[in-house]
Image (cartoon, rainbow, N blue to C red; front, side, top):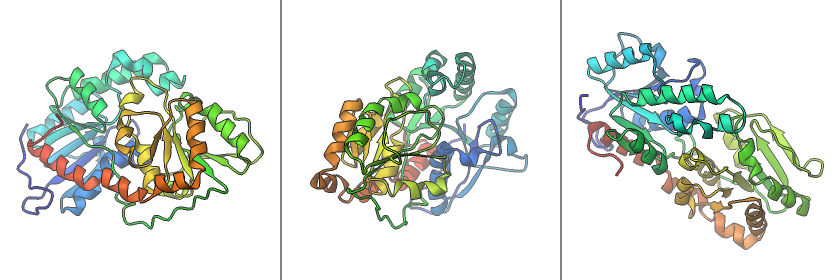
Length: 361
C-alpha cells in the first residue's frame, strides 16, 4: 500500500481525492442507511469543508476512468468481483481502508446478531454474511471502527491490522441548527427510536418499567418511531407508534422529547455498539435512559443515565420528573455533547491515519 503524504486538518497544502464506497446489497439504497450517513457522509462532509474532494457512491458503480487517493469501503463483503476492484485500486496507487461499525465479522458470534436473536434471519444465512465480511476485512491493513470495544475485537480477529477508533459524532447538517427544546414536565414525552426491525428484545429490557411509568403518570406519552413489535398496557393515547422516518426528518421527532430511551440486551454484539441514540438526543437537549453500554460511558456527563433493567428505568424516569434534577441534567447539554462528539476531531484523526501517523492504541 502506498502511504499518502497528507497535511494536517488545518492545512490546504495537499488536498486529497477521497471516495466513500457503500457495500450494501442494493446499490440504490445506501443513502438510506443511517450507518453510512454517520460513518461516511458525515466524515466526508467535514473533509469536504477542509477542501478535500469527496465522492460517495456504491462500489459497483466505480468506473475505470475514476481515480482516487483514498478509498474507504463501508462494511465490505467479499466477492471475486469486489476483490478485483480492490486490486485495481491498489494498482493505481489508491490507499484503501475498511470501515465497520458493528460486530459483523466473526462467524463464531453470528448467533448474537440482532437479526438472529429477534428471529428476523436464519442463523446459517447470517453466519455466511459474517464470513463474507471477515474475508473482506482480511484484505485490508487499515480499518476504522466506531467504538473501543469493536476495535479490540477487530484486533483479536485480525492481529496485523492497524485500527482507528472514530467515535460517532454530531452530524454536520445539525451543527448550525437552532437547538430549542420542546419538552415539558407537564406532558412528558418519552421517545424510542428503533432503527431496524431487530430491537424487540432490546425494548423488552425496559418494557415493564415504561408501562409502570405510564400508569403512574397519566399525562405522559410514549412515542415509538420505527419498526417494533411490542404490547404495553396503557391508557388510550399514551402510546403512539410512528413509521420510521428518514434522517432528514429525524431531528423534528427527537427535539420534542422529554426523555429518550436506548435499552439493549447484553450480548457480545451490543457491547460493541455505539451510543448513537444518546448522542442524537443529547444534541437536541434531551437526556437518554440507556443500558450501560461501554461507548455510552463517554456520555455520562452528557445526558446518559444508566439503567440495567426495567426497575432502574422506572426509577430514572421518575427522578427526571423532579424539575431540579431535569434542569441539572439538561443544562447546556447540547454544547457538552457537541464537545464530546466532534466530527472535526474525527477528520483530523482520519487524515493522520491515512498518512500512517496514528492508529488506536
